[in-house]
Length: 172
Ligand SMILES: Cc1cc2nc3c(=O)[nH]c(=O)nc-3n(C[C@H](O)[C@H](O)[C@H](O)COP(=O)(O)O)c2cc1C
Image (tube, rainbow, N blue to C red; front, side):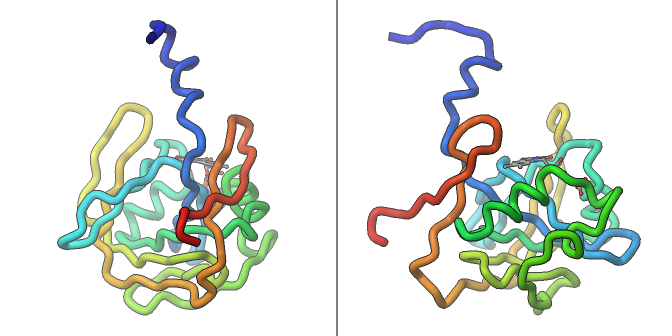
């Protein structure tokens, strides 16, 4: 049986929600990571992914100015970093300096890969769409990288309040 309730109540049933970290070079020249739950694969041929970024995020201008970004799938070892990058703004601080993680340069875009992530995708901005209070940025994937440690698990948000934990597929 379904019970009709207000959206804000019903959407709390969405968990677990995947977590990604997008890394974008901002106009000050620093690499700024932002944690995002609203993300999806939008195409396989050619490969494309989208991220939804709120209007007031520092990352928004950076994405539109640079036209490129990396989408990392953080491992469960990176939960603290994901929380930090998702609660502080690059407008105020250098997040990678204040909470450093291992990084390596992108190969096709001017951004950083997160070394301990399960996977990293280098993206060129293909299109964007205003969707209410967020903007959907679609990136064409120009290079894909996977961690050689296949036992790493992805981090997901498990419940409201940004409680995070590991999720792994059945076959791992
Ligand atoms: C688990 C998690 C998921 C988040 N998902 C999104 C999202 O999908 N879109 C968004 O705009 N902000 C999201 N945020 C909030 C931003 O990461 C946060 O506002 C961040 O401080 C913005 O950084 P910036 O100002 O440097 O761009 C999320 C935060 C967390 C912790």
